[in-house]
Image (tube, rainbow, N blue to C red; front, side):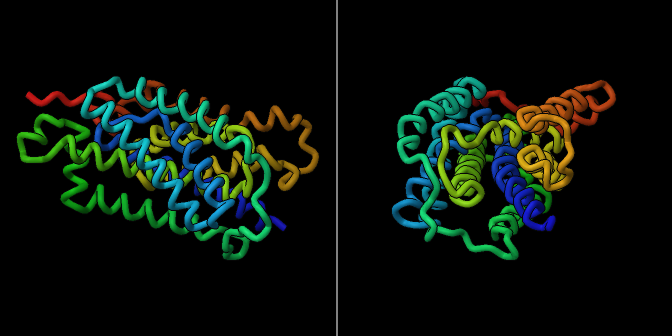
Length: 293
């Protein structure tokens, strides 16, 4: 039966999609957060520990809250205090690796059998929620006045400020929402996809989500397609026998496939033939602090 494999692919795509669409919103407002992996780790640890004691819904809430908290920290550092955005994001990632190792590894193991996520034909409803979030963010960015403000802040914050747009507030809001979604992705990973905790369970999913934003050329619909593709690649690398039992490559080599695919995609969009289109899509002020004159 192929459907259980497809359902697992869609659940990995859900994790990537939640984290990546939040980062896309960040970057549209001009804030880059390379600490997605760290936000996912913190959300994953919080979600798993809360699930052990209070169940799944509180676990998702805890994941989103801790993701939003560290999104706010990143926003204050990079937007208000004008710390280098890459340095701030890397600091959150490094802190998260150390903190969850100390905080959550003592709980390593599966969730109790009674804590089970609801399923629709073996697929978590969170997949449909993630797709709905993509639709909402696409609609906001493409069809609303607030979306125009977000994009103007990412393109030319000085001109946006002159036009009456509150640049700092919009960047704070977008970065916090991005953190919330990354934390939710982490909580979904530990409580539903893995249904357990192991050392640093994200295994690079946050970095793939970050790369997907560039792969998508900052467009939500391309991001959705990319998440589905990488979800399949990730799950195939874990259980290739579902597709073809006679694959000669050893499992450790196959598990490198998602990262090899990420490198190939980033290399392709950096080539000259893609560069013009990529430059037109990239927010002009991405990663640059706004200094009010």
